[in-house]
Each structure stands twice: as structure tokens, then as C-alpha cells.
Image: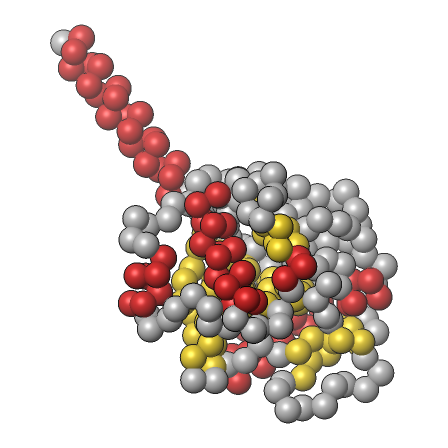
Length: 247
């Protein structure tokens, strides 16, 4: 009987561990044993192609999109292990918020020697953040599973994301767009947020999302007073606006 009870207890511990592993937020997202190159090849992608990252807070999801035939297509999706604060933008240094908005990552923003295994600085505050008086520093996508304003992915996951970003930049991509949303920008979800204090800001973010959905290319983002402005490939810059640039 004692041996039977011990076996049941061991099974309960194993079940709890499995639940722990598959929870998407604050837990430990896993990387499939199949090598990254093979998973990319299954979708017709390869490291070195241009990359675009989309992060959704509410869903705790980071998507890797890669360019093919002039359009970006979703190649991989990873759970975000941890982000901090609540839905809404980062306002000031020390507020514990993870940013929302439109950012660009260049080679100089890569941090291969991060204390959190690998990391890249998203470029907060960008031109729009600075125009709103927002402050903060060292806002990263990194390894481990702890966040004080960053997006933590675990070491195994950031190893893959970092590799794709680094190789895209090494292959000639000037900067990797990182667009961060509070949730998926559907009309239904936006309508549900209509009473929230950041509703107007989120509607503005949705404009950039709609342009991407329509064109297959991340729009260029600009600081236009209290709003983001956007332009697609070949369009002129919005007047009296400051472009969002990588560092």
C-alpha cells in the first residue's frame, strides 16, 4: 500500500510539472527538439531572411515573421515567459511597465553577453515616447523568465529569436521592426476596451497593424505630436513628423 501511495504521489508531481511547463506566462515555454533550421525549412524559410517581430501582451505571444516574395509571413510563434505591469504603455523609469509601440532594432542594440543569456534592446524610448515625456532604459527582449519592464523568453527561446535577428541584420537588413501591442487588434477586442484610459492610444496602434495586414510589410512609424503616424513603402513621410529610428 505504501509503495502504491508513493507511486501516486510521484504521478501527481509529474502532472503538476507538465502543467507548469505549458503555461504561457510566468512559466517556462519550451523549444521543440527539432532544430531551428528544420522547422524554418518546413515553412519555406531560412535564417538570414528579413525578420519582423510582433508581441502581444494579453496573449503572452511573440511572433516571428519573415519576408518572402515581398511580403512578411508568420514563420514561428513563441510564448512570452514573463512581462511586467499591465496593459498600457510604459510611462516612466521604474514604473515596472513593459512598453507598447513601434520600435526598431539595429546591430548596435544586440547584447550577446547579457546577464539574461542573450538580449536585444528594443529602442525605448523611441521618438514618439520621447515626445510624450516617457522615460526608461535597458528595455529588452531577453532570456530567463523574470521581467522588470522587459519581455523574458527563457534562454532556449531567446537563443533562437536572437539568432534570427542577428543573421537578418548580418545579411543586410538595416533594422528589425519590433511592434508591441496590448492585445490582438481586432475590432471586437478594441470595442471591449472602449472604456479604458488608453483606448485612443490603442486605436492609434491599430492603424499601424491594419497597414501591415493590408500590405504585408511593416509600416514606417513616425512621431506626429501626440499620435503615431505611418507610411508604407514608397509613400512620403507624414508632414511635420519625426521618424522612429533604431539606435
